[in-house]
Image (cartoon, rainbow, N blue to C red; front, side, top):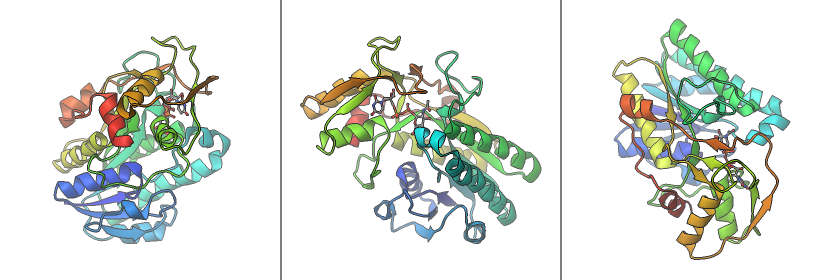
Length: 316
Ligand code: UD1
């Protein structure tokens, strides 16, 4: 099996590449290295340096024996997507159309897409399953939902089978230490905590401690990136077996508060984490927890990392 991983030098992409190589697949990484890292590239994988907005290059790269595409390359900062929608429309929407059109031209019939819990917006019930209403409250989530809608049409009209994986809060790093590239300007909780632990940042700002949760801070479902990677391998194989297109939530079904993340970090490091409580961040739901029952039943996927402490250990 030969898989093209678009965005394979990025955080989740490099873990997907590793999981595919470990499973014996041939891998082609397509990445423009704008946010991905050269050190995340595996020598065993072929590398094509290219941007998803470069349609001709993308199409050319796909015109070899590719069995499946994994599409991760995207802009992913929620706040930035609200300030600069043009950038997100260009990268996440035009890029998505380019990928589908290149697949259509090159006759690649299997696509696994990196979607997000952000497609749901404010949860109306918990845990959030795949039938939950889709009301993204940020432009980033909107771009993910639009790609899901596009894929449905390319399935009907061009026979491209897809699986959309709606990640909850991706966290952690490969435990063997094989993946070293880190975001230079992290936006998410765990990479920010790592910078505080490493002394690169003075303290962690906790966004709100007056939520209606067990300790006043937001609850999230942190899922280990190696578990996410494993779901991609399973999703590709399922589609190559001829199963229909599908959408799956990927989370641990385990809600953890920001304060619990801080306490777990302190247990792992044996040190007090400098913390400052500040106001709420706009657009943050109080609680976001997945139901991943469908992925378990249909993909046979079950996360191996179930405790936040284990996940943090691999992050730091
Ligand atoms: C968001 C998106 C998610 C997306 C992810 C990737 C939503 C609902 N979720 O997750 O779909 O895939 O970003 O970027 O849009 N926090 C602090 N201090 C910090 C940073 C975070 O207190 O410095 C808190 C946040 O308020 C939140 C939790 O930590 O409660 C996790 O935040 P973050 O890691 O940014 O992820 P989400 O916003 O949950």
